Length: 223
Image (cartoon, rainbow, N blue to C red):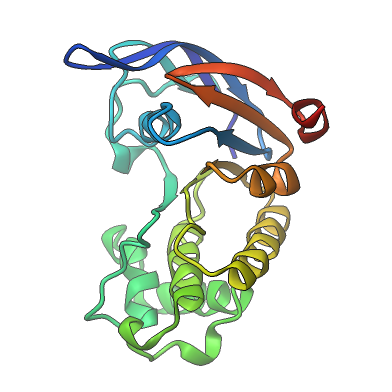
């Protein structure tokens, strides 16, 4: 687990400033949400934590380690994308095992870890099924399992529930929260849904037009 420090972060794309002068500390083991409308800088900030973007100015630190220009694969972060980004030609097992195979773990260790994480997301009975045969909610769980199985220090989720219907969204909210508490993992969650942010988070950062306008607990933000 890691504490994330974002210090005086600015990110520019040409003449557009996507994020400006951001100072944030995300505590170890915290469920922290970036809340705001489309184009407000929340996903850009998430991608800077993941290493997909480097800030134009400012620093990203995990604990005491400067990660500003460290490649994504060397950060030990897990990412769950809005569109799940699963491999449709692979089974559930192969999808979840992918990150472990890249790390060149033994087959027996991979099998044990994948089986364990699929039990936790309640998909162990679908282990040999093709991902393309699963429902949206089940695919979302596979994406979560794939991110969790590598035992990341920080789990990053980019609007992970926006493609699900209302009932499934409620179900998955509970599921994500349960897993976060069970693993005690530092989780950074991006959403434009106020109910989602207020019902799940330890703390929330409210973004608008590239700036963080307020940071607080759900109660503080609501009031």
